[in-house]
Image (tube, rainbow, N blue to C red):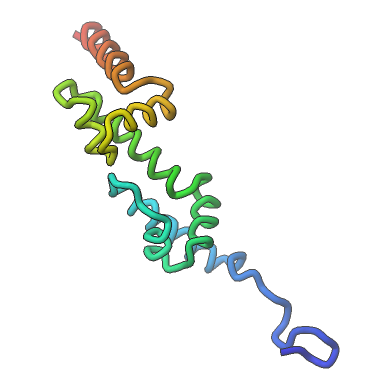
Length: 141
């Protein structure tokens, strides 16, 4: 509603997201989204993230990016690649198994994404890690 002078009846329009309580709420919700994405190995659609934080998809995307510097998809990919890096340190686990455990059912897709994110193929990463691990264990004995 408007007053006779043309101004809004209830004061200036407020950006609800700039209110400190709301900002803290969005940080908490983003934290819940981060936790959920970290626990999943399979890709998580934005609609699922928005349901978790109880806002529409566009607000979820904007707030997630504002608090983490990346989209939920980019964040989850980072988590999956870091998980793969840990799994590849185990020489008993095949590269295909490492990919599957991290939500990549296709080994060639896993290798392609891994190389794009780390600069090394999974095999190169494993060789480099195992080579460094064996050198350090010789020096620490």
